[in-house]
Length: 110
Image (cartoon, rainbow, N blue to C red):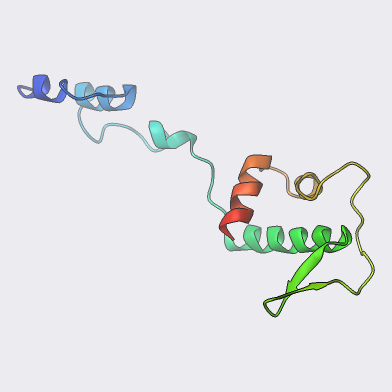
């Protein structure tokens, strides 16, 4: 590649250098920088996360949003969280394969 010296003027990571030396598009699926990304949340997982969050949030006795208005919950708790365990830890016990950080970030996005 005659123009490789121009490309070397800019910062490259190992994946970009490998593509330059072996040819662009030479990386297989699952290789490179994008291979370490966490899997996306599918709609079923999002729904399960939403249901678990509200289940444990209600059990904690906190206030809930109903019709856009903050109101205290009148119903008794249905699934109490174990002593000393927060809502996220309770969700993680029922939602395997996800880290605490992934769950928190997804809850913030929703």
